[in-house]
Length: 339
Image (tube, rainbow, N blue to C red; front, top):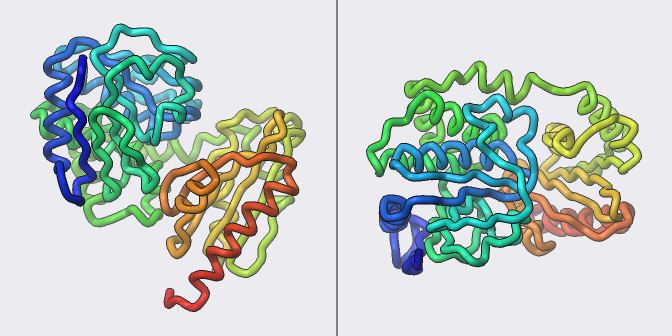
């Protein structure tokens, strides 16, 4: 299906968010089969949004194929219909369109074969880019799940308890439990609406935050042994050997950066993980005064203003020097500004 190019960020000139919502729903109504995917190593927003988008498409009488380059993390496998997300490295179709959720380009998915399809891009990241035929980027949205919820409302389709559970998970995880800078009064209104629609906030929070594996706790111990602080900056890291000794997997690294950020008076934190191929995966966190998304983008990464990431060339000492230099410069830039 050939799509007319449409762009909107909901706040700037040109097309409005309403126009992009209408364009997306029009494509779904006129098509039959759609691909839904998100970035590699999918987090709570990616998984919950994919599942909710798939349910929206099916409720509109169409077919949705949900595909990820990486498997769903264990903590999200209890979400309704999580088994619908298929793991693959290449997609074939045919599809009327591929819907990409919170990606700044095709390469972020790590999926091969996307370039031959018409593309719909739905994103809320500060580093979002207009690369698709239809682009809906809303920096004010707390998560992409919020944007999918707006599609449900615009289409007049019921938000079932299953849908509400998936979208509530996107809100909870992408706001860091309602503590990141993107949390607004409207975020709590959305959480209320989803609760009324059947999401169980207590059960979802317990699944997300109280289902930690022993391997992750052992890995956290290794990271905390490498914890350092320098004024308003804190950092910690793990080696590949730490991963092996802990019997940890990639998803066990989620959230470790927040332990460094939780230190009183620390403004920015970084967690570094050594990969087997001599690269270093970097997770950046901020309490609000430092825009870590801008730092990550300069290093070919991306994300939120308060939570972003990138991958650097190793060895670990070199990457640590590089990223700490970026953060020290950023902190110096706000040193004289009021808090």
